[in-house]
Image (cartoon, rainbow, N blue to C red; front, side, top):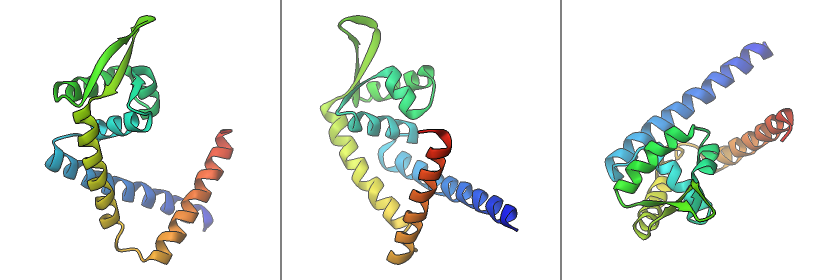
Length: 148
């Protein structure tokens, strides 16, 4: 019985994540003409203080440098980021938010937060708190298993 419930729970988590992600992808594209990977890259840059190495961004997003290059190309073309070689090693590329990129990301982040709040709005405060506590517990268990 426990095996079956574990498997059902795993599939439900995957399904819910996919449904939320699908809606967010559509909303980001419609409202800001950006993809979810572009939004994630802007978020990573914001989190890093505005500038980060391309290789660090690919690690943070868990994608190849080639995938990051395509995302950066589009964001650079739209004026949201700029790319420059690092002074001491020209092979290392630094990606920075532009002023337009910072302003745009701040607007996107506020709308993103509102969307998430709306999507999860069907859960009451108590249920939301309990779900969060359980997910935090699950994260701890998974990190312990992985040795983090």
